[in-house]
Length: 277
Image (cartoon, rainbow, N blue to C red):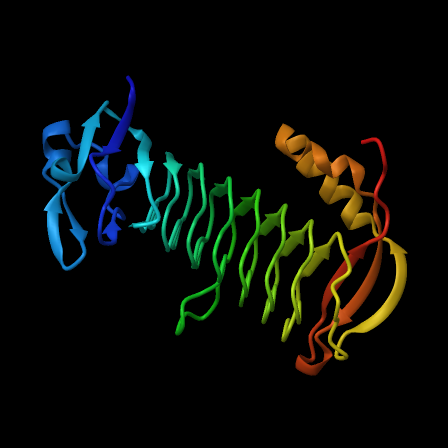
């Protein structure tokens, strides 16, 4: 069978909620029935067949073509299968995701991986604020899963994160890892102000030392950290796309904190970068 493919007929003028276009919701439905599914478009609901040219039957493998930042809710609460978005996507990518894979071939908006509990999200571009965070009122942010961003991320990455791993190959904004309870965040370019603000546990790995580190973090000096050696090795073995971790060694300057929150987390500033890798 061929992938179930949705091609936007024209760029939407308003936000288009595609949270129903998941392997879970579409499983067992015929193509005719899928075309009749009503999607929220602005302040109205319109049949999917009016908005998209739809073909294919493999509901476990979904492709959305000609996507724009107006499409929100991609992969909402999905538990299995695969969604590939060719183009940009809007807010709430993978919100409350419990399994499966989402790949965005472009940029993504705010609140990506919000309250995610399992699965894998790859964003081949930049992502907005609150990656892996919880919405206001949620008890925590991301509680498990794996997120990889090839570009930059906005502010508050991993806010209230409880478990899982976020890898950002570009830059991160201010308050990266704020109020973390556990988990791992890796930023391979510059991070903004107040990384780890209010964190209680967890690890933030930074390839470049930020301009400011809060006074509530205590310097523990340069250390060779076995955790980093094992983490990088595991990531390299997981996927060829992580081959770039070969150039990073296990030596890091460790800062413990946030002591103002009686936290036992850590900022690890990588010290060893192998040339020619």
